[in-house]
Image 1: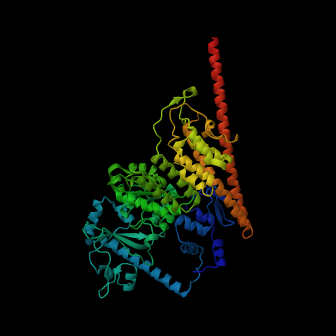
Image 2: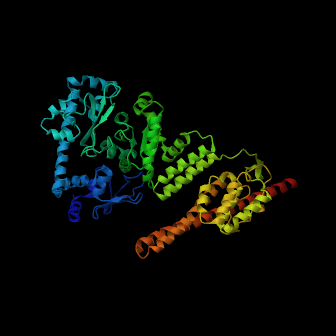
Image 3: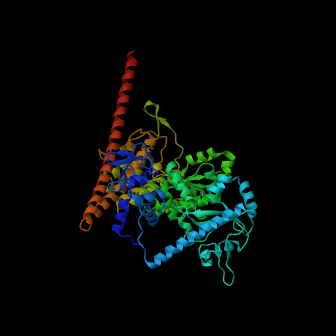
Length: 627
């Protein structure tokens, strides 16, 4: 359906945006505008403003921006045309007629909605009638209250192939087939899809029934426990979430959305007070469903059973989501105790047990790491190499470059600590009794070989510092191997130095011999390269952390320089965009230089403090001798 800009402007002009938003958000007058705490993210001080004159809202905290149609799409989960229709009805405007074919399709959809509404009424009446006694007893055994049964629209489909067709005889048989209520088989009379099942309506964001799910009363071999409607013009299971029309409103209050595995899980959660719960349609989460979830909350909580099937479902959701990740948007995972679903847990331990699990979810990164670490034995080097390959396979699926880089760094850090744990080492006491780890005195042969391998690689201050840092902290060499090898591509001398460090890591293992200065063994770095991880007697944890940051900065710097060159080349074709990109990149480069300066000052301050401590100690000794 084509809507002209003029018609859309007329629609927006008839809508008072603040009145629309005030239905769900408490606004306060602020001069000519309105303000509130942002409904899109948690905050204590209002940064969300609504301007009726200009017809838009804007949050200065999370940068959400839009008009009336955007509001209906983001806050109510409506597709564009549905949002337009809702606003047009309020404004008293007629939506322009589409082309004839589109008009026929819209008319058929409207008729199908009528069919589904009539079917829902019939299922509900059957549950309440004499034929629904067994179904009512089943729901009672499940612990469902009358309120919950009414709220979720439970019904009953009699075990009769022609009952529904007779009940909906006012509708054409073709419509019943198209709606998925009847099954058509060649040379046979169409018959009811749902028979002998407790029925649940599946509704869209506008609360219209678009499909059904049915459950048998007793599990039987060869019979599906749950049966859903097939895909129809109204229902696409990959783009639908069960209970979204209720959960969308609830999630605006809680700032959360829970994704359970099935309908009954959602109903059990809602009955216990967790009304912000949805479920996919019996399949793994799709990309479209993830996007629907992100409209409701930045980090939806996936709630899976603790058994192997639940773990596999969690990983399938992770694999679908990794390519979609963007800043501020991810998934969180809660795995229930083995053998329990949400209903079981709530009945056994109460809602507080569920709330406790939801308050401590696992991150997506934690899930990937733990699953791949535990999925197969890790006894041999080949096993460990397989773990690394699987982790990097997940990383490569991430499309956003910054998130991909951060995932790579974090997962390789965990892999390095797991695959190359530090060897047991003795301790010695430095000044003040602080225990520090130091490298052993490196053999002259190793020093000579490293000097020869490094060549001109030591001319760069940061590169020099990092190579010295890896030599001083050899347990970190394999942790940063991939980053250094990637950096060394195209630089034969640097590659030779990195290869030598990898080959010599065992000879460089920390030990209990007397402490030495790195300068005793390696070419000294430039005077300006003053980093904590090169400092005598530095705290080992701080040194390793600073070394990791230095490696990250070292890797990012050439990528930034290449991106600046690429942006400069685009000035002729896109001067405005190229300039903005160049400014952003140069700002990041200045941030890197600033951080390096901070690391330098950190070391200088530490040295000054150490000199001061030494002077104080000498004074105390002198005073004691005087006494």
